[in-house]
Amino acid sequence: MFENVFMQIGVVLGLAAVGGALAQLLRQPLIVAFIAVGMLLGPSVSGVVTYSSEIELFARLGIALLLFIVGLKLDLHVIRTVGPVALASGLGQVFFTSVVGYLLALMLGLSPVAALYVAVALTFSSTIIIVKLLSDKREVDSLHGRIAVGFLIVQDIVVVLVMIGLTAFGQADGAVHLGWEALQILLKGAAMLLTVALLMRYVLPRLMSHLARSSELLMLFAIAWAVLGASAGDALGFSKEVGAFLAGISIASTPFREQVAARLVSLRDFLLLFFFIELGAALDLGALGGQLGASAVFSLFVLIGNPLIVMAIMGYMGYRKRTGFLAGLTVAQISEFSLILAALGLSLGHLDQETVGLITLVGLITISVSTYMILYSHQLYARLAPWLSVFERELPHRELDSPVDADARPDMLLIGLGRYGAALAANLRERGARLLAMDFDPSTVERHTRDGYQVHYGDAEDPEFLATLPLADMRWVVSTVRDRDINRMLLHGLRAQKYGGQVAISASNVREARQFESEGVDLTFVPYADAARDAAMRLVTEPPTTDPSPEAAK
Image 1: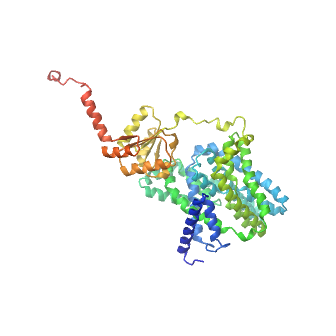
Image 2: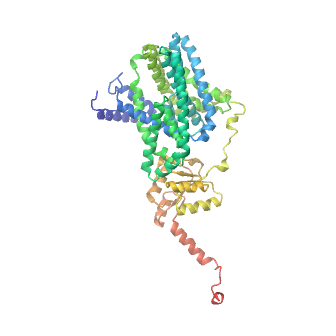
């Protein structure tokens, strides 16, 4: 409709902003609003958006950054902890959903081939949508969030193998071709993991320490690394999601991961808008007629059956019913990969247009409904908890074997490790304080980490970075940065995060300290004035340690 691509992007952004504002007014999820805007702009309605390589490019960049940030939040210890349950839940859910879905499709009158495609399409959940929702709720770092991300990545790998298998069987020498493709995937996967491990061990920590001297350069490298990782995953026959996820993991053990993740959140959210627009525009509404009954049955199975399968597996493995429920809700929808799978089946002649329309309608229903289920997951659990005990062992040992040691958890956040901050940190640690420190100088972070401090690389002015910190555990937040604007931004960010502890601020002079106290700051420091006052007090109250008389001098 628009020959000028720049104008088309402007119209898309403008209508998305209007749709988002309307959704916010009606207290509806933005994701649902953006998908609805995509449907309105797509060829099935207005035709404003048909195929646009620019929109597709922005969408792919958003996906890469989303999974890259998820990988940043997972270190090797977390992978070792949740890896077994993620693998068991992911593979178990794929198996049981495909078997039950296949039998259900046969009962509804589908042919065996069509039933197989529908069953496989029902097994895969949308990594992009789920991770976006968990990120918005700040639950990616929770136990159920980590497990969910783990089995979603397992699903992504399985769907790649399934699509390779279907493509191979669509050719004359399908069996031979499938065996060769499977061998290639295994070899490429091993090579990719080995390369990532070597980079993590020998290259990336030193490189990022050097790049972190410039925050702009650090962000540029992070974006480039995410996109290159996604490209590598795609080129090797995996998905862009897997490649970007591994790129994030490769720098997750560096002290710069929180700052990188916080700085990329806004860019990620902007680019993901195009993914949801593209997803809505790709839905063929003309193929949905006559499929309401079957789509309702399959949608109920996905919305209810898939979470029950995950809860059963996790309960058997020893997790609490709450963890299983919250993780299980993340598989209560089908993926954009399911729509791609349907399109592949149509191109191979395995499916007709009616079956493609059925899968599309199930996707539209489950994505929309599951968004509300995840956003209101805690309220749902509060209502359903009495009936979920069947999914929990008498002793949920997985969550009892590793209790959180409250005595080892930091309870004081110290911002700034300059001369004054470092001296304060040393004195606090001598008095038994459990410190979490942060500083914007990478060399300072590295030096204090070697000295045994728990230090994060980050910027006190960045509210997104503050959201990544365990503020709920902190009794005190102490800023030793004597910059009024930075401290004001810090206070604004703490209020936005609804921080309920006490705050101490360093000021440049007494007047500035009084201003902060009038704004509700619990304690203020004026380092040089405080030091001078303390020195004067000691000079006039402490007795001399030596005899200054002339006789003593002799």
